[in-house]
Amino acid sequence: MDQAVEVKRKDRKIPVGPEMADRCYTCGTCGGGCPATGLVPGWDARKAIRAIVFGMEQEVIDSKWPWVCTLCGRCQYQCPMGIQLMKTFRACRTARDRDKVPGPIHKGTMMNLERGNNLGIPRDDFLFLLADLGVEMENDEEQPCPGFYVPVDKEGANIITTINSKEPFGEPDDMKFWWRIFYAAKEDFTVSSTNWEGVNWGLFSGDDPAWKEQVGRVIENARRLKCKTILYPE
Amino acid sequence: MDLLEEYIKSGRIKLNTHKYHETFTVHDPCNYVRKSVMIYNDSPNNGEKCRWIAQQCIDPSLYREMCDDPLNNFCCGAGGGAWAMPYDQERLDYGKVKVDQIRDTGAELVIAPCHNCRDQILKGLGAEHKKKTPGFDMGNYQETLYLWELVANCLEYEPWSQEEIDAAHAARDAQFERDGIELEEE
Ligand code: SF4
Ligand code: SF4
Image (cartoon, rainbow over all chains, first blue to last red; front, side, top):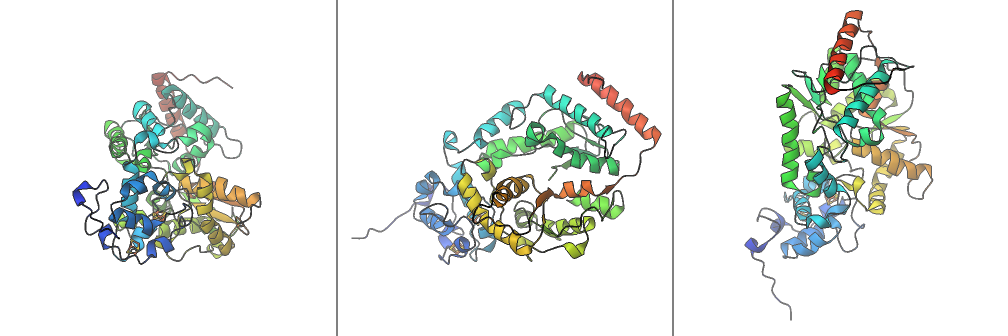
């Protein structure tokens, strides 16, 4: 015999309000337009939302689904019932034990909290690299930029820019694109010597306190250096 | 994106539109286009701005549209931290939708205004295309560029004056002294 499924809202790990998952009328718009449909056996956006409605959120949390979903937001943007799918799937990530977060994004987040960037690049190495790249740009064969250097911790600069740690780590020349634009525009910019990371993995690992902490640090840098504008160079 | 637009509109940077002669298309990163509109309701949206900036760099007649509605464009497949996650096959399979879109534009260059999307399209999908992996045929595709890479490569530089250069050198030397940086002389 079928059993009635009874779900108490307050027992839920994922806070879905009645204006959220409960309203789903299973139209399938979300899963239909989602490139992740078919990638995780047994799951797609609609099924995950239905499972949460039926109180099976732990199964969603334990599944790969919320991590293969890229939180692109297309389903949420399209859902005729206004259900916040993307927000819900991110909440599923949050509900995972931290040691079960796949890949380096949790470790990187912890690294960032401890050392100011996701990859743990030491301050001195970073400053030396910026200095070196500045000299390279000044003397560049194809397009020299006489007078260029990377201003660090410059008080009162117009723009303070964050750095994506993959660049100093593995693709340092890619930082020059923005610097060349600044050079041509004669922009008064600066980079902070600490906590310069511009990639917030706390956002993706579902770690709200770390996410907020990192945003706070970027703002704190701008305050300390009295910069008017923060640029995430993307 | 706003900053680039402002530099170009105000004439603070000048661009040479004859550097590239390839057909090009623009990808819409979820974070800067759709999600930005979902949160800030920005108008014009960043997808439109990006198309405009790219067309200041390359002749607009070479532009090939990927998606008429930037707000409903598809994710590159590496969003939400997926580039760093251990689910590579899923990430690539997700990207097949993007592969098809790029092939259908017929464009040779893809402009991506996001670090993550650029890596996925260049090193993920683009690499599979070049290896001729079945399912990853991107047609005429040759190269992915950051939006700011495209702009930087098209810059027309106005030379700095000697005073500006001297002032910058003095400021740089003071900074190196403060931070204890000693570069080897070449
Ligand atoms: S689009 Fe919305 S209403 Fe339709 S199945 Fe998905 S969550 Fe339910
Ligand atoms: S947010 Fe996730 S579930 Fe929704 S369309 Fe994007 S990948 Fe699919």
